[in-house]
Length: 457
Image 1 (cartoon, rainbow, N blue to C red):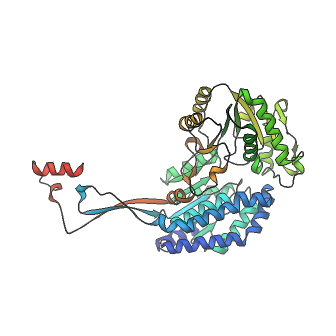
Image 2 (image 1 turned 180 degrees about the vertical axis):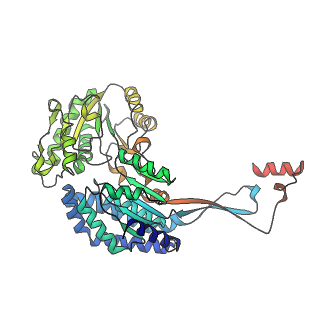
Image 3 (image 1 turned 120 degrees about the vertical axis):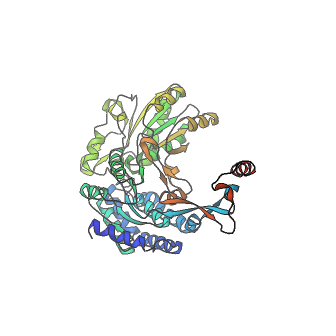
């Protein structure tokens, strides 16, 4: 079907009211979960082909999280979709007031290549739970996974309910030129700006899940061995191609040498002495990104790693020390397996420095100082993060995930995801057996005015 035909069929289907019953939504979520389980092996093979992901990493970071989100929505959609009564002022006596979540209608979900299955099906599950129809546009940079997604969803749902549009920039532009009721985009800041320009033309609400340079702060009280272990896990997962990966380390100058040493130890433990021969170590998505990442290397500052293998699009887990803010690696989001290490003397220095930079999607702090933890989480602006760990804050349906400022707007996962794909109507149900006269003209002073004043308090 052509894009115009898909959109018109979805609009008709939504207007029919077919997606509104909660029982229907739950049934569709169950169908989606069954489809994920049916195609799980094919999904794993596609992830290995596109990104070199191992079966375990593919499950841990993609299919496993997807099944968890779908199951969560199956359990909670009925409660999320119910109306919520609120207090009614005396001035509106006799009536009841409530808030009622309703689906936007026809939504567009545009997903990236770095977690191509997770970041497509997770928001789709939230959109289905909220009662929408959806057009899904997976990335052209992960063609194997996109093909499995298209096959799975076309088998699972009719196109008037959920449709997949594959392709590249031409298809992206064609979709953004159309009028949707809601747009959900995950990807780079540059493309996010284009999405927002298009949605502004039609006043279409949008959520942008972007990225940025997420700092990892290590203070002098941190448990360095454990910090290094968890930082290495978060940084080099998926070869650093994770929107919430620690982009760079800011460590107190007193622990720089010890932390660097422990990070190098952990890289060898987790990825072996020769990571390029490790079958569980992935690859960069394509030559364009491979060349960009390799161009950020400064051989004089490499402490560990740095070897590139163009034929397999692999770059070793790499550590760079004595990095400055003027270095090439600090001028853009790395999105690859390079770890720059910078130092600081005081936290006041960090606060002023971060305040002058784009707001990151994540921030990580390794510290045993409770007062310092409280101060950092209050004074720094960022999407979300962890204390004494990395990455894992996005792996739960109990908390929303999203950015702030330059790193995005809006959030999803669990209840936040349901609310993201819903418009909440505020409704007053006024009774007809009584009608207070004081609000109508001609207005009367004295007792009526005092009573009205009391009711409105």
